[in-house]
Amino acid sequence: MQPILILNYASYLEPLGGGSKADRYIAESIAAAGRPCKVVVPASHCEFDATYAGENSYTVETQLLNGVSLDIVFESRQSHYRRSTGLVIHAVKQIKALRPRSILICGSDRGYQLLKIAATHSNESNVIYIPRTTLDLPFGPNALVQDAYATNCLHASDAILCPSQYLVDYIAKWGNGLQASKFDVPVYGQPPFHNF
Image (cartoon, rainbow, N blue to C red; front, side):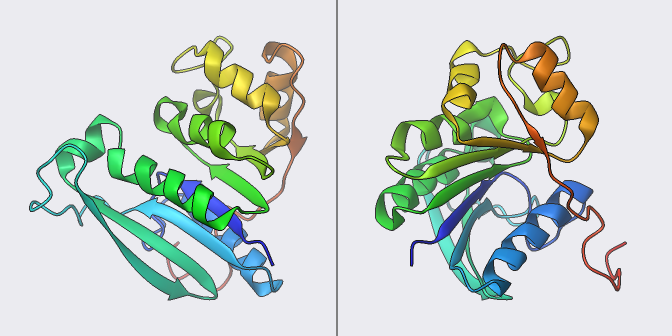
């Protein structure tokens, strides 16, 4: 069975915000439904490894957590803040090796790098983009960065899922023909709320 691959820049082991908790809920729900799920994320802000001083130096720790195969990418702080080079390289390797059924890009995608590599390397995989705010979109007046290539990648994607009707309407207004669907997911995680 082809896995679902989730690519994310947010911390997974320590889901501090609503978006991170929602992403973890999505991954664990996929695994609970019996579908293999692989998540590729960076190490948390406290877990950078000073031994990885080179621009492209990184290592990966794989864990199984609640049925989800988790690849945690450790790299130097310098590489992480530039573009998370190791995360991007590892994500491309996973897309090519796994040939996933779907690729989900969740949350804040710095420079739209994960969206761009998913669009470039996806082959027959479905690409699904899950922005959290208007800042996660490459167009419109509230975009952090206007990016025509990333907008074209969104046009080529199979779906855009949003946590609010406001974001769906924003995409319809500013996305030059893009359509999105509202996707309700619990941003506080699953009860009981230990991390609330």
